[in-house]
Length: 361
Image (cartoon, rainbow, N blue to C red; front, side):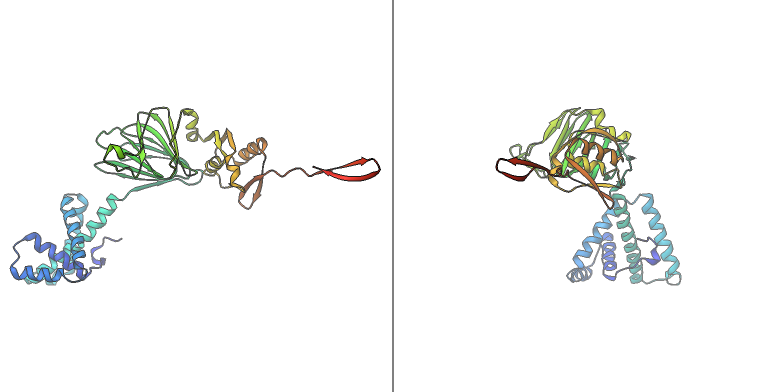
């Protein structure tokens, strides 16, 4: 969106709404003017426009001393004055009001854009096989695994992160007055200052706490009375919580191997009795040659081992050597399927009084 005043389209109805904001802010409307305002307000759509203009007007007052707003006001007034030099010297009172409204609506439009730009979440994303470290404005550090997307919004009352895909580790700067929350799946992880990782894999949320304390609750947890409070989990350092999104079953708590759980930061991926389905999802974060199961039932096979990220061939070789699975390249995918049974052996057996062939598998 351009902030060039001369190129900004001004809608007449919204300009009228801005004009009424100007006139009402100055106060002292006559009875006739109040009647005129109420009649204008009764026109279809005008009430909504006036509400929008008022909201932005109030917001512009709250941020009036921002350098960006001061610059916008100066630019708007300067450009408007240049474009109206011949009519600026002796305008009528009504013309002055229209000028004020025009400048006001331009400022309101640009202020609305600036508010949206300042308050919109920052997005951090990694591609296949890519890892990234992001430093947030509050001093927190976020380490993103491959194929990961997080959105971050830092506000005065809190620090809000949403994990949309993949896995990230958070080293949170201590700030007791601004809780640090990570929304993932149907869960909300709440911390103040600590170190933990959050992962969304195969429709399962996994949280590993390395230092400090975090509380894991449902994102829909808004209950006020203790009797209706959904389960909340206060995790201790060195523990891992896992829970299937949307499941009513209790969350699983265990103690993982912490150094191995961070192997992805060193370019390794570790599997400790991992279901093949989620192991494949992890492997696919790093590889352009993607794996796929021909039969979802194979996803329950348990996998163990440490592999270099991106080394799909080594993973396939290990899995097919230990399990009744074979891999087949189809296009840019490797399809994992059940290993075919060996061909039937043909055995000839001679019985008394007759000769017949029988196939024995």
